[in-house]
Length: 499
Image (cartoon, rainbow, N blue to C red; front, side, top):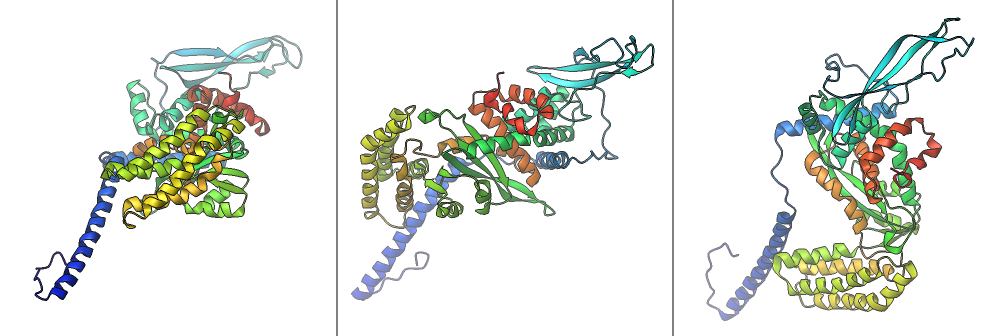
């Protein structure tokens, strides 16, 4: 109507009807403008920088595909395939300092006849290692000895190494993993950094190391998952990750899920941990499979895929006040709404009680909440319901209030249970590293590559939660895990590490 040439009617009755229609359209346009302004403010707040160059995207595509292939090869214990056009391994440059370690059989006497052993040669294995701030080469020397009486040969065995027939030491593998998944440096950029040190380490070589290392460390990630799922209450969240769609040259939206355990706010003795899982889509079956063994409370957002879990009765829902607050913050920023501002203030009173309760045992936390948070909580619920009757039901503010009323009802259990939290921030904090990495990696190459990333994030983020240097811990763990029985792998978890 507004874009048509207006001809005002002469008849008063028709004029009143025309005016009513005009006002209705103006109101609809105003609501649409309000929604668009709200969306625009959100896009501006979450906007990333300019897209990467095509060449960089190609490097990332190759990198993620190579990690996936290496992880699959290691997991299935397949032999390495020697590609015809693969560049030959170059010797480690002479300018890298050497540290020589000599391994002997342990005795100068022959094990068969007791005769004296004499040296007839040696085998030398060079291992490129990284210690914080510099590269070194470990020269592992194993003398070949023979008995002067019976000609029996003796030689010390080569110690287990993270990658068989590979030349990277555990410290270097740890450095590459942490640089990629904690410091968000894609492998081709790491390759460029190594080149400045005079080292020829191709991106495909680094990808092979990452894939095989994560496959070797997978039992540790599974142990962390068992630890998380044994909790009384966990935190759950997911975030989108682009994954290359085979044969199309395009990407599809996959997901990384995190399940966190953190009992520090109520003086729990269990170590904190974060367990990551990867899936090619966001179907509800994935969290159902991940949490098949879990029984207890779960803090989460309003994702509909969780509903089947709650209906089963095995998992009880705890909603997130941070999600509620965030919607009012967005509206206040874009519109300056006084109702949104007051809602933020009322929610702040609940967080003030949490500040007082933090670090207290569960019974004391529940007591404080019933005395000080419950009245504010109930009043917030009533006040929001009243505000809904005073504003347009189609506005973004009305949508935020309706969302808040739905989530507040599902958040109420936190008032009576001291082991629960007011929000799901423990899981959301675990997604920060993924969000930063996603900006640099752009995508994962396949489900195998996504699984490798989930293993790396599980180990690195759990180490950080426990105040453990992930690079030092992973270096020590990679040096030892090959000789560890699978039944004792829990002893290698970061909270058992002495440094």
